[in-house]
Image (cartoon, rainbow, N blue to C red; front, side, top):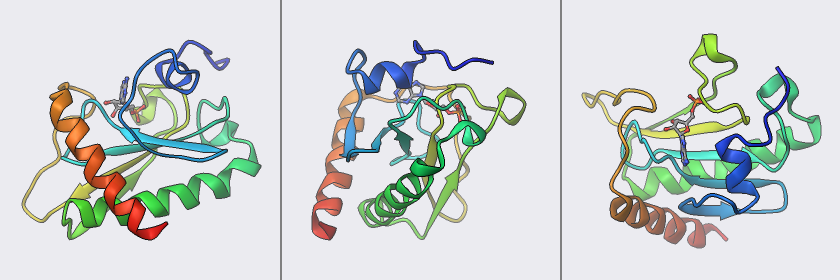
Length: 142
Ligand code: AMP
């Protein structure tokens, strides 16, 4: 399957669709998932047109991992999460629904089940507040 330049994350990268941004550098962008599986669910994407990990330019692999690590630290503190799940789906058979490579960062606590994947839209006011909490924690590490 060829990379679709009109997928929603490509539109976010081009500024044609909105997002609740928490972090950006030359190679990556991180923003709130609009259908979070838990409060604080954040996504990291490379500024490179790859559908999945197999398509990702090796030059972006380290940048993606570094941004993920930074955001995991901030999300963990912002949501006082005892655990953080990092997940990445490759192909519709694996459950991938947006075909621009991305890494999920999801705070986890014992006894709290994840909500269903990509199912229920969050309140945008809440997402904005959650993004601000993460941005404040990222600023402490800068
Ligand atoms: P995946 O199924 O691994 O491809 O994950 C795609 C994720 O993108 C899901 O968790 C969706 O909730 C999320 N998502 C879809 N559209 C948007 C959007 N416009 N902004 C932020 N997250 C989105």
